[in-house]
Amino acid sequence: MNFRIIGEINDIETIAVGNSIRELERLRKVYGSSRWRKLKGIATIQLEDGTVYRAEVHWYEAHGLGKKEMKIKYILE
Image 1 (tube, rainbow, N blue to C red):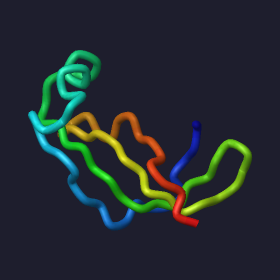
Image 2: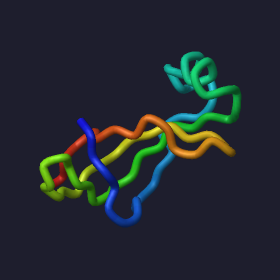
Image 3: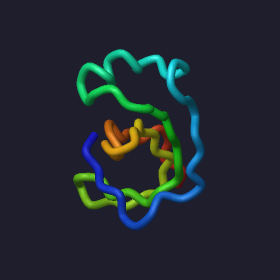
């Protein structure tokens, strides 16, 4: 599902760090070795069809690489 973030991501929390991430080996192969974290937060998103929702989003992040593989976990509204 394609979407874009409108505005800022709020209430950011770390879910997992380093070896606690199940996808760590794949992330390192695809994006490179770094200190990976899995995070979640609340954001306003816009779907491809133009509808706007508040949603919980999850993503992976590494220092110097930024946010990778962002996905919608739950629609809140």
